[in-house]
Image (cartoon, rainbow, N blue to C red; front, top):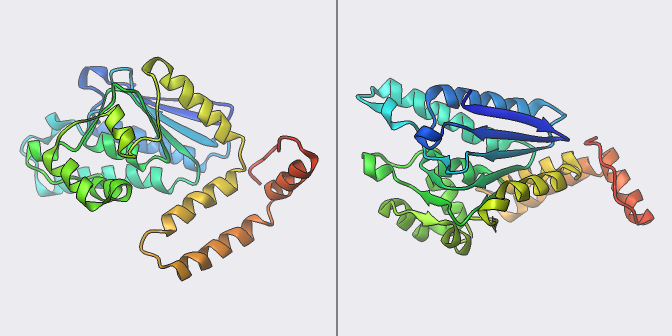
Length: 256
């Protein structure tokens, strides 16, 4: 199996494991990854998702060996599969953490950019390498990169196809935390456990608020924000949060 799944104490860990191809995504791996993401989205036992690769690579993109003499229908099918994965991460109403060591190129970088937190080791190497195979970027990478660093820098990173190391990515604001490689997975697990203790509905609505900032003027955003907050204020988790705050204790959220 090339896409492993584990669930413990509300934290789901999805691991890409195809080291001989630097975790390049085959068609079968895309199907497996999407299936696991969809499971995480609907299963109430999952509160946080950690997406990681093996020690030497996060994901080197799509498997180019499967792209020889492609037809237009083949290309559409490949893109459809990639888009469904990116949407599954972005729209999942649960925090997603990408733990990146080694190569994260092409769709591999898009997977990380779609996450809510990106933890990276100094060994991380991010890159939009599509021009090297005569393609424009896909996997939402132009949109996602522009959201992070603006149009000018996103063009430079994409059109030069240069690799960006973990330290530079952190300086550019493309990485949440830079973590020593030996501690990367431990830090991702610790952050996941911290987030798993939060009120799940509130975390999900927070993600929706960030999504609503795109293409929305302030008045429309504030109206959407008021709907979200009016729903959350009636939840059991909010009541528990208030009780815990007044009682000066840690809240015990249940996602209700």
